[in-house]
Amino acid sequence: MTKHQIEMVTSAERRRRWSRDEKERLVAATFEPGTRVSEIARSAGIPVSQLFRWRKQICQISAPSVPQLVPVEVALPGPASPTAPPPVSRSRKKVSLVTIELGGGRRLRIESDVDTEALS
Image: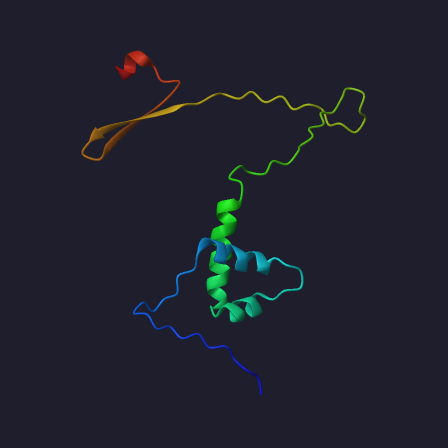
C-alpha cells in the first residue's frame, strides 16, 4: 500500500500562491535529463498544464529578444567560372504610387510617371 501526501488548505483562500523562486525551481527541474514533467507536477500537486505554462512564461522572460542571425555567404560568379550563367540585365523602373482620399469613398491613385500639369 502506497502512502499519498495530502495538502490541506485551511485558509479562506482556495488557491495556493507560488513564489517566483518556487516556480523557477520546478521549471528548472523539468530541464534535468531523464526527468518527466508529469512526475514533477504530481509531486508539487499541480496540473501538468500549469507547469508547462510557467515554463513558457519563464523561458520567454529569460530568452533574449534579439533574433538569432545566421551567417550567410554570398558567392558571386567570377568571369573565369565556366559554369556561371551570363549576367541578366534587367532594367528596373522605380514606380511609386500616391493615393489621395477625396471623400465620399472616392480615391485618386497617381503613379510616379504622371504629367504634373495634367494632375493640377
